[in-house]
Image 1 (cartoon, each protein chain N blue to C red):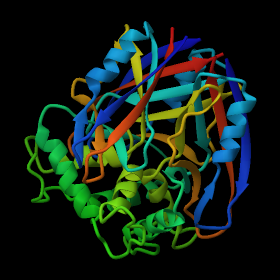
Image 2 (image 1 turned 180 degrees about the vertical axis):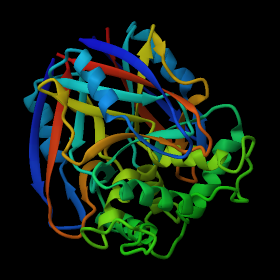
Image 3 (image 1 turned 90 degrees about the vertical axis):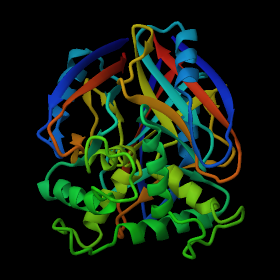
Image 4 (image 1 turned 90 degrees about the horizontal axis):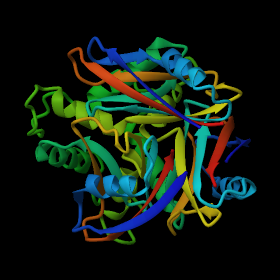
Length: 138
Length: 138
Length: 138
C-alpha cells in the first residue's frame, strides 16, 4: 500500500521550521500501520533535518556553526548569481539532507522522544518550498 | 511484505560499533529476498554511517577529523546542558546520518565489499541507543 | 511491486557525473507509477548527491569547498595506503551520501526543476563504480 501527498511551506528566510506535525498528519491520513514515511524536498538550497526538539538553542547553535563553516560571500565561490548566500545554500543542503525516511509503527511516526523534523531554509530570503511525502507499508 | 524489529546497543562513549552482523541477521529473519532494509536511530546525538570496514584507522581518522571540525566546548555554542560534547554531538549527528537504507538482493544485504554499517556514538559518555529496522520487499 | 537493476560508471577521477538520465531510465523500466527509487552506491570513497543542475560552477565550487575542508595529505590522517586522497575520500563520502531515495509520481522521478542526480567520485584517479537501483511502488 502506498500513499503520496505534498505540501508547501513559506519560509521567512534562513532558519528552521518544525514540520513534524504536518508529516505525522500525512502519515496518519495514509492509514498505514507499519511502514516508512519518505519526506522529500524538491529544492537544492534548503534541507530537511532530524534535530533535537526541546531546546531552541540547539537549532541556533547549528546555524552559528554552519554559517562559520560555509561563509556567505566566501571569495572561493564563483556561483553567486542570486547573492552571497546562493552557493553556501547549495553546500549546506548537501552537508545536511534533502530527504528523510521515517519509520511508522502502530500507525504513527516512530521517532525518538527528542527527535523533531525540521525544514531548514538555507537562503537568507523567504522562499516557497515544496515537500513530497510518500508513505508505504501495510 | 514488511518486517519490523528493533535492538539496543550500549555504547562505551564516543566512537564506532560495527552493527553490520545485527542488521544482516534481521534482514535474513524477514525472509525478504529482494527489497530494502531501513535502519533508523532514534537519537539526535549519535549516528549511523556506512564506512570502510578493513582498516580501523579509517574510523579513528574520521573521529580525529570530526573532533577538529566540531570542537567540544567551542565558545560559540550556547547549548551545553549536558556538557562540552552535547552540542557537538547534535551537529555531528546532522553532518553524518541518523538513518540508512540498504538494498537486499538474494536474501542478504547487497553491500559493497568494503562497506560496513556502524553506530557512531557522538557523546563522550556511554549511552543506550535504540535502532529500529524496517525491512520490506518480496 | 519491486524492481532491481544495477549499472556501473567509469569515473575519470575526482568530480561529478550526471546520472539523472540513467536513474530515470531504470525508474521507467520498472513500470511503477507511484513509489520510490532507491539509488545505492556500493563504495565508501565516492558518493551520490542531489545538486543544482543548471550552472556547472555549482559543482566546481562544491569541489573547491570540500577540498579545502578535507585536505588531501593532511598529516592528521594515518590511513594513506592508497595515497594522499584515500582518507579524504572516505570522509567526503560520509559528509555527502552513499544512497538517495527519490520519489516517483506519474511514472517518473518527481525531482524539483533544479535537482540533478550526480555520482561524485572522491578519489583523484579513475574508478569503476557500481550503483544498485531498487524501485518499489505500484
